[in-house]
Image (cartoon, rainbow over all chains, first blue to last red; front, side):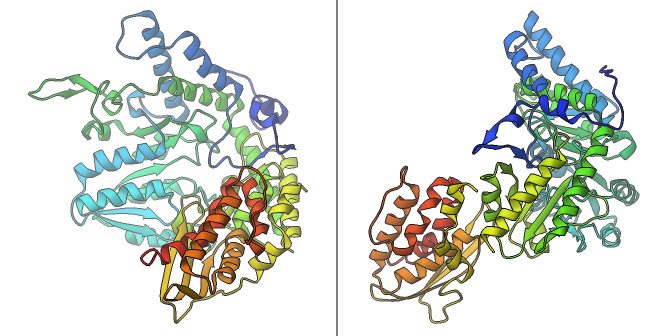
Length: 414
Length: 143
């Protein structure tokens, strides 16, 4: 497939930055410093051009027409599926389902697998560091089925309490739904261990991989997760497209999530039959151009190399951590041993919202708020935090500008 | 430093946010209401002591940003002794000040005028109005 030659451990920042047109623009007259990548990453020209090219030259509805455009559109979408399958090393293309994003991926499993397999007294284990999208769908299905939700607590430094997790596991556990990387704390959870113990207890595991796939190589066959989901827009791809991976035999056993076109085999008023995987779970005309665009985003990330990204981003994280720790009155929330390039913090006496506004007027985009992880905020007894999250295109200079912005915050609130 | 940032965080606002007036629960309150800012998880509760048509006392408890706290603090001072209808009218006036397209002066807003800079920060309008919405909610049944 994509065989660009690259040096495995280095990243050519200026050439990477040149690929992202939005990064060179000014905000309030200042150079944009974009540190909100955990919410959504920016898009390289390659992805933007790919989406344009689809609409300009090769767009038609997929999997139906006999005509030329329908065929090349279908081929492009299926090629994207294969590219993504290879990127996460799934066993077969049938295991890669296009969804709107991780939120839909989780809702699909909760709704289809959950309603079929959960019953009164069954247990679902979540963690205290989950995004709302990996909490609420389970609460909804628990309400419908009588299943019970158990929660793995997190330690002061932001790691999962693994001893508690092992105690929660039992023969009542039907599913462990867990994030791979915490969006609010940056913690990388010990996923292999979690999956190992869950399987030993006879439970399936669903992983929210949104914050993991942009930062670290994911090998689904090696991980052995039963479900794994992520959003395209956090992986330098378009918004409105994402992936749900499921093991083929489990997906086969699940009823459709939505009914409509694309997912049918035959329809009659006596009863209908379903299409084969993955189409069984892709009702309606899919988000064709963005699915193809996500394939291009994956090609882009592969051409830079996750090894190179995984060498660059931790150095940004440690530089930012060091600089923040030098500042008096700054407190970092989440100091796990194994962290992705996400850093949540507070400045004593200044509300995160005010910090966000002042940074913004200096061209620096960070996220402030609860990051859709209110249980995490509750755990640390804070209303909100400021979160800087880094991507492959961020630089040390940008971190220094960010720190300078924080000096201005402290100046105003001194 | 951009002019607009200093315009937002004026001394009078920082003063109110660091030393909020009438902060705390009002034990003898007759009416109270709590509202959240779903954007950031901030919460505010406004307590009122009302007799007839008049607000005799107003306090608040909040977890919020400088804008939320300053606006609440100023409100608690300004609505004290006013009729309920006057307090609501004041909110309307204040709301039009911070949502106006251009800077213009509105009489009778006192310290609240300092919050006019919020108009340049549309994401912060909710912060400036949070306490007022709680006040409005607290008097809903009477008004």
